[in-house]
Structure formats: C-alpha cells, structure tokens
Image 1 (tube, each protein chain N blue to C red):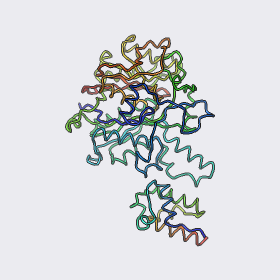
Image 2 (cartoon, one colour):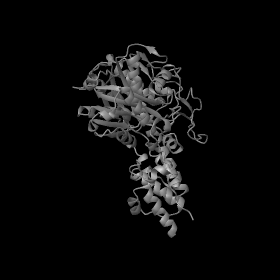
Image 3 (cartoon, each protein chain N blue to C red):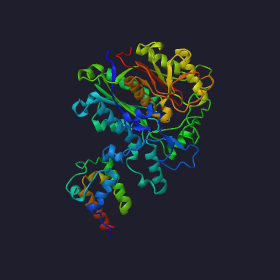
Length: 81
Length: 407
C-alpha cells in the first residue's frame, strides 16, 4: 500500500518550495517555521493529491499546518481507501 | 525641492549580466542578439532575440523564490540586489514604510504561464501550480522585491510597453516627493517562450531576419523591424539630501519626465513623442541646447523611425544633437528597455562617453540624424531618453549630472 513518508514529503517540498529540506528537519517543524506560506502548502497538497491519488479538501488543507500533520492525514486517507 | 538622485544600478542585459559587464560590452559594440535558445524557434517566423547570458537563478536569488516566480521576476530580483549593493544600502536598516518599489512590466510571467497552461492542457486543472495565481501578473516583480527587502511603502507597477520604464521611474520620483527615502524602480521583461513570442508577433513590427548583425537596424535604409529581448535594469533612487548625508553622490538626477498619448491613427495629427520630450525638458528646467545626447526609442520600423527623427529634428534642429540606440545590441526589452537606456545614459555621464548604435550603415531618407555609431568621448551633463510603447504611449525622461529639480 502506498504511504507518504517524510522523505517523500521533503522531496515534494524541495520541488514546490525550492529550498533544501531534509526529512529530519521537517518532522519537528511547522510549515510556517519552514518558510512555507499558504500558497506553498496548497502547492504541496496538490502535488500529493496528484501523485498519491488521494483527495485533500481545501478545508482540510487549512488545518494541516505542519509536515507531520500532512503525513498523518494523507496516510490515514490512504489506509481508509 | 528635493532632487531624485540615482544611487544604484543593476543590469541584466542580453550583452552583459552585471552593470560593468553590460557597459564594457556596449562600448565595445558587442551584441547580445542571437538565435533563441530558451525554446526551439525553428517553426516560428522570428528566430532571433537577445537573451541574458549566463544567468542561473539558483546562484542569483533565494531558492524559495525560484518556483514561485517567473524568469522575468528572477532577472529583476537579481538586478535589484545589484542595484542595492551598488547604492551601498542595506534595506534592513531603513524604516520599512519609507521604502517603495515601482516597476514596469509589459508581458508579465508568460514563460511560467505557458508551463502551467501546458499542464492544464495535458493533465488537467489539478496539475496547475498554485503559484500561477501570483507569478504571471504584472505586479509580481514589484511584490516580490517589496517582500524580499521589506519595502512596505506605497508600491506600484506600470504597464505601458516600452514606455513603462520611464513612467515607473517618474512615479518613483513622486513617491520620494511624498516622503519615501528610497525607491527601487526600473523594469525587466522576459517573454521568450512560444506563447510570449506569438503574442509579440501580432504587432507585425518584429524582424524576421536570421542575421544577428542585420536584423535590427533602426534609422537604416534596410530597417526591417526589431528584435525582441529579455532583461532590463533596476535603479535605486533617493532624495539627494538623504544620499549626500551619507556621503553618496550617485550617478545623476531624474530631472524631468513627460508622458503623452498618440492621437488616433489616421487623424493626421502629430504623434505625441515631441511633446513628451518638451514636457520632460521643461520640467527639468533644460533647453534643447542643454541636452548632450538623446537615447532614441529606435523602433526599427521605417515609418516610425521617420516619425521619431522628425520629432528629434523639430525639437533640436537638423543634426543638432548626438542620437544613439545601444538597444541595437540587446533588442527591445519592453518594460526593461527604457530602464536600461536610463542606466546607459547615467553610465555615459559617469565615463564621459556616448555608447554606439551598431549595425546601421546607411541612414534612411528622412532619418538625417547625428547617429552615434562609434563610442564618442564627450562630456555628458544632460541626456534625454525617449521611449514609445505599442498602442500609443510616449515617454521621455531628462537625466542630469548636476542637481536639477523637477518643477
């Protein structure tokens, strides 16, 4: 079953937000602390939706304020699918 | 009244990335025009352009900004860093609401837009990037410069095609008059992608020549349109008392600006360029005889070249003022073009040399100008920069080496 790992998310963040992210670094921080504004989070979420075939509604994106919450949310949705 | 002093220059031009690189190439007559490499132009009627050489966004601007912004904004961010560095200013040390950004833009982020439209077409709406919402539009460069440097005073963008660079600078001067202590102004454009190029073709004014040395020959008997280019220049301007208080003398003053709009086609009335120039000189407190050199708009379309030559002759008299068009080495940069001409005029003042117009061998009938075709060493105390934007925009800026105040 497909899962979103911190490594995967760090890779997506590098592409979307253009900075050097590591899996270790992002696990303990919020998107805001990582310098990702709301558009960056939207872009990251849409890439995840496209690649993992998982739906993340706009209302949910607002609540996903950190890489950890993003990884947990996406993996719950993938497990439920 | 306070004069607006240009204290910093940043240049990203097709014949040189960096102010001194551009200037030495320009004085040497080195062109930046060549076959388009940003995409394969084979199937398009226009295959030549001026592309900025050796520009690597990853080396020039913060990584976070690269996927958020178009190439045109990348060039402006890099040129702004150069201009601030040249001015010796650290924006972090200045009050954020007393700094302002006013840029010109003509095409917006077309290359970014093309990429996202392709995703929409090939894969669907879910694949269109979120940054398309902010990267394409004309104010994106102004906004990104403002955010990056914490310049939170009144900001703006002006879209008047090639005339926009001068109008933006004039608006920046107004911002200084209303209390700003520093303004970043100028402009860039970068519309060398299939979508951007096709949009430019609609005017019919682009050269279809494949010979980089003969494609863009304003005022020449063989003028056949112009070559497009990317890049431009950014300028830091400050009230002269503020700059001098920190021991900076700057390049020269933005002493006067005039803008007019052409009468409707077929009206038989005179185009507005001469009047724009007269207004600029009047506001600068200059007479035509005070002007040492004119940087021409130089469209390269025979009828428009004759119009401009007539305007210059009407104002100055026959062959009474040196005229030059270093843009023959860069192509027309749209929003970046007139900003780059202002930079060239200020460098001409600094070094006492008028840069050449290249390629022109035989002046067309009706274009009997004193066209500078080799670098001409002479004192430059006042320069007039002319610009015409597609659709009827005319602008002129008078630059002076000595302190002058706009009336």
